[in-house]
Length: 316
Length: 258
Image: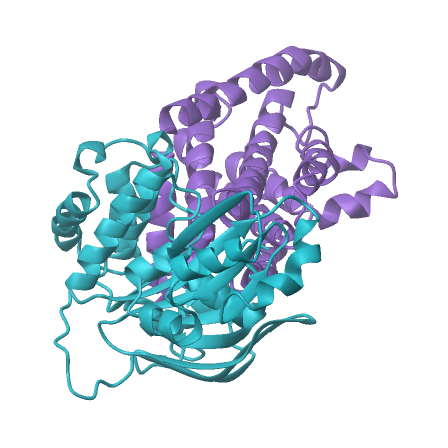
């Protein structure tokens, strides 16, 4: 796998200017600007339908751009698609492994699509099976694999051509918590080896775990950008007090909540109080005579940043 | 560049086929035997008793064998063109996986057509041996007839591929077989001369690829003179192939590279 030394002023691997994608009369991506540096792990965070997958597909040269400029690895996806795809690894949202073939055969055929010599593929398959913890499943048919194994195989497949950048579209959606952690561990290893990762996710914890830098997307636009920590520091408060109330009560007491913390968000079933000192805020709430069903104190997360930008939670 | 990539697409289909080839070859062998026994020998005895000079000078078994070869090739092409494509685009999405590599839509279509050609040839060669078993024609003439069978199979594969890429509903494919493939199988001169058809249906038969495949197979296998100039038929089948492939390109792009 290629290893990139950090350089003083790296040339970006991706630059997008005014990148736009229309489908018939819907606007999937609405003129966004961003860049990705070599070796970094870059995330697109947003709810379903935010336009993340469309951006990934344009970068992967499998979806023509409607307007704007896009350069990936110094190539133009519009005119140099095959050359560009030869240097990328792609892990799509929906598994598209060949169900009829074994684990090894899937990797082998994929290597063939990249025009790699058979001996080189065989060598590479050994490494990748080990990396994906699938050595024991080498001759199993894909059908027989668990969801987590299939996803790891898809990642291994995306690495067969030693790509300069790996594109992962919602890599852990639909996986159980244990399978997610195994996958994160594998991706973390890749990151340490210097592979540039491009990740879309609607999981906050995933973005915080994996991304050096990310953009928050909503309705085709970028609404925030930075490292997970800096976004939280910049747009949220360190701690959050969640007060849960019975249905209907929140509307009545909304005004009384306002003074309790520097920022207050009132959702359908609970109020979020953004504060620098959670204990003091909880005390103030009790002093105000509020009687919530439950009180939860937690660290601020990207979810809170997203809420700040869009006024909605990610599950909406 | 495009040719080696297309070969790799065909190679991947061959890898999948390797898992099922025994059963597949077995049915390619027994289906013609059943048909030739039931219709060629069984029904043929009655036909021959009624027609002392034969059909174009041939016994019904001999008349049927090359026609059935062409019809089987046609059905094979249609089957590969329909289910393979729908699976690749929609069910298993393996076409999407291929297009994330240097393979593009032209290489995908070319490779898919190469594979259809390979499948049609396998089925036709097995059929040719059955023809020899039934003593319809000598080995080399039977094998030579696999060439026009290949033409008709590939042309129908291209037409079906174009149709499949242009529809999204899964019900469209069984409908296509019910209203296009099976009527063509029955009424394009494989089982009886198209002169037996009502007058208005005869021009329809002339337009079908199978009619041209049937008369070419009969000419090569048994030397029966063709109704239409054989080179017109060959050109027509090649044109249908090219046309089907060209028509498939745009919908493939729209579906796979939106």
